[in-house]
Image (cartoon, rainbow, N blue to C red; front, top):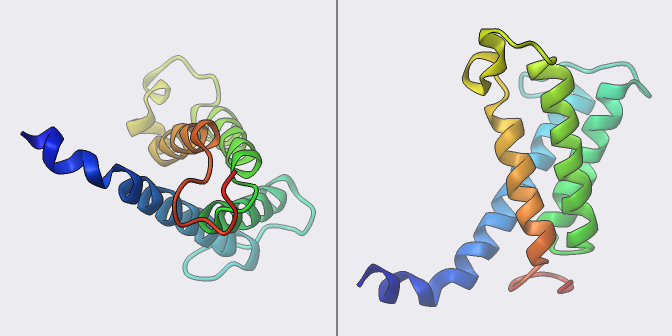
Amino acid sequence: MLDRLLAPHASRAYMALRIVSGLLFAFHGVQKIFGVFGGTSPDVGSQLWIGGLIELVTGLLIALGIGTRVAAFLASGTMAVAYFQFHWKFQFDDNFFPAVNGGELAVVYCFVFLYIACRGAGAGSARAT
């Protein structure tokens, strides 16, 4: 019964996932690059600054549905690096768990963007890819 109710809305739900996750990712990049809304501004050209730039650009591209597969794949990889380098840090203690090391969002973004890279832009995109 639930399948009949929800299945017709799958395309719109995916569009909402793509747009909302892209915009949130872009917002995180804005926080990082410009040091606004509680963010801190790293040195221009540093790894964190470049990561923020990737977040901003790929997030907007994903939300708009332009070059979605490439943008989402890059965003997914960026979040994998963020998790391993800045959250987990290859420690096999309590810090191994995302709930402890604060890396839940990086892991979720990594897999959401990997899914978007596999599926493409879909409905509501500026250019379906």
